[in-house]
Image (tube, helix red, strand yellow):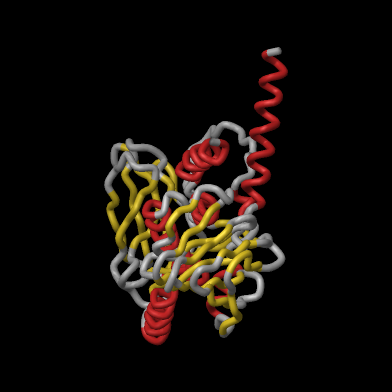
Length: 313
């Protein structure tokens, strides 16, 4: 009987993970005015105070004198949610059970592109067996962009006994030891793109150094770029547009930073958003995607386990 229960529990766990991994948002609710609520199960309603991602099976309702905008991920279509309405969120269409929604101007190419990045989350929640590491290996993001507002680099911490030496072009930074899973280092502004290298030191001696990575049979250096000039101004304008549409701290901002190879900025945006919106647990796999890009294996594995447990509960 115990064996049967164990097998059933395992099957339930695997089933829960498959369902969770396949769930990507249908759309996003934004520009909330008045009383807007949503439910995942049709029973428990929660108030929406800011941007909210919507999944298949959700319902959204509006109170008197209350409105919001719903953007459909796949098409970029926008809909106005009118007062005193109840809307079913389905994978094929939005349906009004009460009241009404009407079509509005479609989102621009940028916003539509950012929305479409929220897909295929399953690949970042799949459990993969790995052999125990025999050798210490330094790994890091292959290409990264920094700016005046987002000047930090980040990599996986090999252990609290290690200090680090970061070299960007001809500038070298001494990075102290930390007990955190992620090592962060602030970089001073520079021009254009530079090759970067990282060495882990123990007792002042280099133990391991970041090696060039192989792609299509060719060895390549790890490169960091500083955003400036016209590109910086374009980014600032785009950030302002996103904040006006979706709020100052949103997953849409994280998505935009991904498109710019600003992986540390994206990670920080997703982390802050999830901290402020713990009910948005379904969106966590997109943070996992950034962890994988930054080669942050330890924090990825730790948070993946916590996420799996929370999804089962």
